[in-house]
Image (cartoon, rainbow, N blue to C red; front, side, top):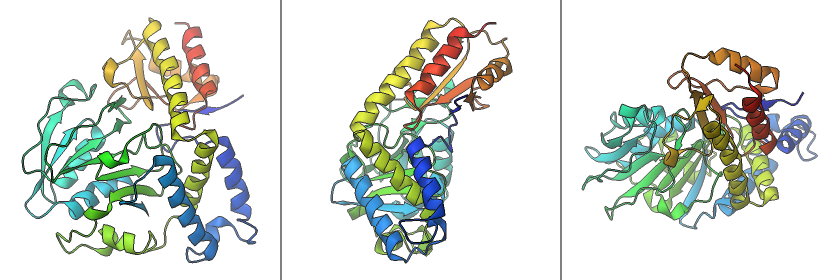
Length: 357
């Protein structure tokens, strides 16, 4: 029986990437050593970091005035690093609250400066992306979470920056590389790898060069973008294995035809599942129709008295795993990241159609 893993993260990886990993675990590039035991100062690993950086720049069309960093600590570390590096003492930044992760980012910003929550969808359980807000005159940046893993909402159009000295910061952990974006709209993008581009352990940061080294405060070296840029993401021992898997995943995306092609597949997958949710009287979507995510698709029984566990068990018996919704939403959640085959969505739709109460 074919298994389909709908986990929100760590998430499924493409089958060709898993096969490449199996080989590299035994021996990497005829070195006689496993990729997990090689020094990050060795020539093959330095070449790997150059290669993965060049590849992400090509796939995302990153302009020359941006740096790419491969860090650790996940998006959670960036919740702190962003204000520590980009927010002067006593200054404020604007945050749009659209879920649990943006709320955590707000909490961490307030330890450094002042987070202005200029809009929030909390009162409706984060079921939509708010578009009614005004940027504060003195804010240094606007922070958004581009896709909300738990609640299943996603920005379709990014906020305009009205202050000429301000910029947009985005946590793109759960939709990076899933669709075409204009990097030049952002001052900084960060993304934990474990949802769409690799395993847990490495965090992608794309930062405009003029934002590096503002020196607003004396920072520990590990929290300073300047230090990581100067040392080409090798200030300390980097997560070599995770970066290797990211590079293999980027090769796979290239082989498909790049981000532009994988976006078409993602749209098709999401449309199939949403169409069934809307058609099937057993289910409904708790998300505003205009803000529905292509990556994380929550759905619930139309009748709240029905047994979620019965449907989850039914799906498990059919090889459809990790569909339980987050406790704050309930019901079910299908995470259909880049690596989820379209056949997995087809099987889930079929299971929904054949489920008998």
